[in-house]
Length: 75
Image (cartoon, rainbow, N blue to C red):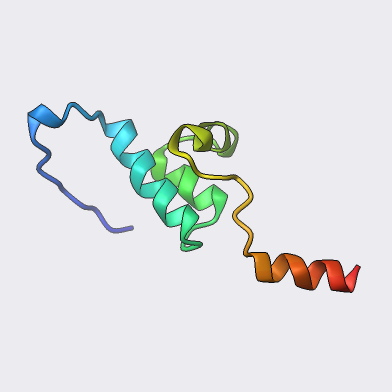
């Protein structure tokens, strides 16, 4: 796993969990990480991560609309 070190200004007033969640939710939203991978990146359980997604305006249903229409057609 890669390690990243960031220098965050003290005036930003963001804690480590919030920064981890911001990165993890963005990568999850982009489909680059699964729910489990994003939860691990944030240092949380899958359940806790899923429950916190709403606070970051990210839907747990990370499913492209094109896939949904294919599923409906195949049902």
